[in-house]
Image (cartoon, rainbow, N blue to C red; front, side):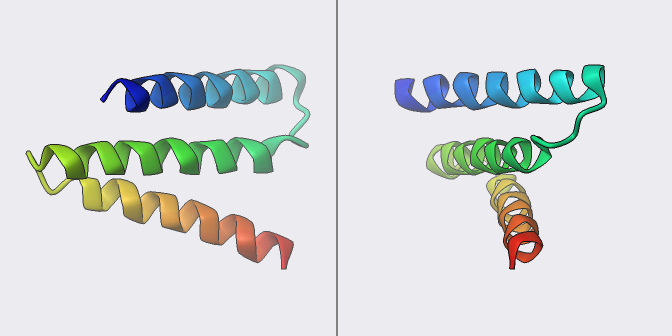
Length: 77
Protein backbone atom coordinates (compact mmCIF):
# COMPACT_ATOMS: atom_id res chain seq x y z
CA UNK A 1 0.00 0.00 0.00
CA UNK A 2 2.85 2.38 0.79
CA UNK A 3 4.55 1.63 -2.53
CA UNK A 4 1.48 2.58 -4.55
CA UNK A 5 1.20 5.85 -2.64
CA UNK A 6 4.80 6.73 -3.53
CA UNK A 7 4.22 5.75 -7.17
CA UNK A 8 1.02 7.80 -7.37
CA UNK A 9 2.72 10.88 -5.98
CA UNK A 10 5.78 10.46 -8.21
CA UNK A 11 3.89 9.84 -11.45
CA UNK A 12 1.36 12.55 -10.63
CA UNK A 13 4.12 15.08 -9.97
CA UNK A 14 5.90 14.20 -13.23
CA UNK A 15 2.67 14.55 -15.22
CA UNK A 16 1.85 17.85 -13.54
CA UNK A 17 5.32 19.32 -14.04
CA UNK A 18 5.53 18.29 -17.70
CA UNK A 19 2.00 19.51 -18.40
CA UNK A 20 2.56 22.89 -16.77
CA UNK A 21 5.87 23.27 -18.62
CA UNK A 22 4.21 22.46 -21.95
CA UNK A 23 1.37 24.90 -21.38
CA UNK A 24 3.60 27.65 -20.07
CA UNK A 25 6.18 27.54 -22.87
CA UNK A 26 3.82 26.29 -25.61
CA UNK A 27 6.47 23.65 -26.40
CA UNK A 28 4.75 20.29 -26.77
CA UNK A 29 7.80 18.15 -27.54
CA UNK A 30 7.42 16.32 -24.22
CA UNK A 31 3.78 15.43 -24.77
CA UNK A 32 4.59 11.79 -25.49
CA UNK A 33 6.49 11.42 -22.23
CA UNK A 34 3.61 13.08 -20.40
CA UNK A 35 1.14 10.61 -21.91
CA UNK A 36 3.42 7.72 -20.98
CA UNK A 37 3.57 8.79 -17.33
CA UNK A 38 -0.16 9.47 -17.33
CA UNK A 39 -0.69 5.89 -18.51
CA UNK A 40 1.57 4.64 -15.73
CA UNK A 41 -0.38 6.69 -13.20
CA UNK A 42 -3.68 5.29 -14.44
CA UNK A 43 -2.25 1.76 -14.28
CA UNK A 44 -1.18 2.24 -10.67
CA UNK A 45 -4.61 3.63 -9.80
CA UNK A 46 -6.26 0.64 -11.49
CA UNK A 47 -4.10 -1.87 -9.63
CA UNK A 48 -4.79 -0.16 -6.34
CA UNK A 49 -8.55 -0.14 -6.97
CA UNK A 50 -8.52 -3.81 -7.99
CA UNK A 51 -6.72 -4.76 -4.77
CA UNK A 52 -9.27 -2.86 -2.70
CA UNK A 53 -12.19 -4.63 -4.46
CA UNK A 54 -14.49 -1.87 -3.23
CA UNK A 55 -15.79 -0.92 -6.63
CA UNK A 56 -15.61 -1.80 -10.29
CA UNK A 57 -13.94 1.52 -11.05
CA UNK A 58 -10.57 -0.18 -11.58
CA UNK A 59 -11.80 -1.36 -15.01
CA UNK A 60 -12.04 2.27 -16.10
CA UNK A 61 -8.50 3.03 -14.92
CA UNK A 62 -7.02 0.01 -16.67
CA UNK A 63 -8.99 0.70 -19.87
CA UNK A 64 -7.79 4.32 -19.90
CA UNK A 65 -4.18 3.22 -19.38
CA UNK A 66 -4.44 0.72 -22.24
CA UNK A 67 -5.87 3.39 -24.55
CA UNK A 68 -3.05 5.81 -23.65
CA UNK A 69 -0.37 3.18 -24.27
CA UNK A 70 -2.03 2.11 -27.54
CA UNK A 71 -2.13 5.73 -28.70
CA UNK A 72 1.58 6.09 -28.04
CA UNK A 73 2.33 2.79 -29.75
CA UNK A 74 0.38 3.75 -32.87
CA UNK A 75 2.05 7.14 -32.95
CA UNK A 76 5.52 5.61 -33.13
CA UNK A 77 4.76 2.75 -35.54
